[in-house]
Each structure stands twice: as C-alpha cells, then as structure tokens.
Length: 184
Image 1 (cartoon, helix red, strand yellow):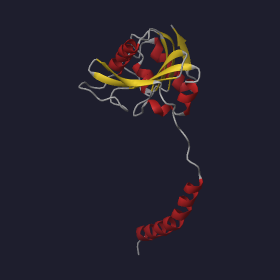
Image 2: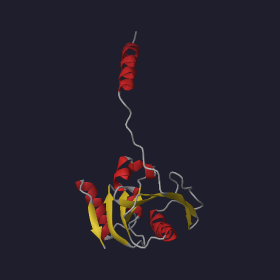
Image 3: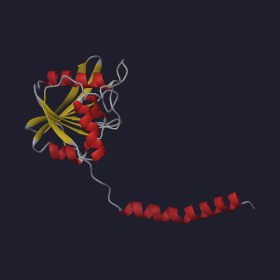
Image 4: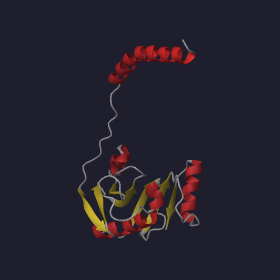
C-alpha cells in the first residue's frame, strides 16, 4: 500500500469520527440574530438607466448608507438597527447588488457615485451624511452629493481618482484601521 493511500484512509476514518461531533456542536450553538428593522419607506428610483432599490429607516438627520461589494443594505445587520435609532438611514443597493438590477451599462464606481446624487434628489434630500463601506466608500469618492460628513471604511481598491484627498484619507484609514470623518 502506498503512503498516499494510507493518508487517504486515515483522513477518511478521522473525518467519519469528527463529523458527528461537529454536527452536534453546531446544533447546540444558537444562531446569530441579524434582523433588520422594517423600513418606513422603500421602493425603486430610476437614475441613468439603473433602477436603484432604496429603503429608509428611522427618523432624524439623514444618513446615506452604502454597502460593500457583493453586499446589500442588510449587510450592516444590527448596526443598521442602531443607526436608525437616532438617524434617518437611507440604504441603497448599489448597481448589480441586492434588489438593484445590473442595467444596460458596465459597473463603474464613478457612475454609481454620481447616481447616488440622483437617487437622493428623487427622494427629496438636499444634504446628507454618508457612511460607505469598501466599494460603497469608493463609489462616493467623486460624486456631486451635497455631503455634510462622510465616513469611509475599508477601501480595498482605489478608484481611478486616487489623487483626490478624500480617497487618500479613505485608503489611509484602511491601513491604520482608524476610519475618519470628513466635513465639507
């Protein structure tokens, strides 16, 4: 018998003994609750050929919440609930994510950032604070939004506008794990 065959047999036997223990342990652990609040208002806003899904939670000063890549509004989980206690949170599923279709154009961080201004205008917001995570932070970098403060966290990739001060601060906050607020 070869060494490879012996290793395969040993691994199979070990896995068969470990499997019941793993299943039993998984059944004992309670699942994490990540329920999000029910939105006060939700729908779609068509901007530049993309039909963006939005949901508005809570009351107070408006805060635009932009999720990261491959996510959607609910990726903020319990943080969304906490933010909505004191703020009016406007969550938007970015192009090709969640309940927002891909549309007929390619994905572009610059275009998505520009589209957020259109979504907010359709919803009647003039000035907002922005919290963007990863791709959401990068998509905001060059938009014409009228922003009071913005919070950027974990920009994994720089958009084509790296020379702008705002995106440099975003990438620096990623390196130091200390996100920053920026007032305009």
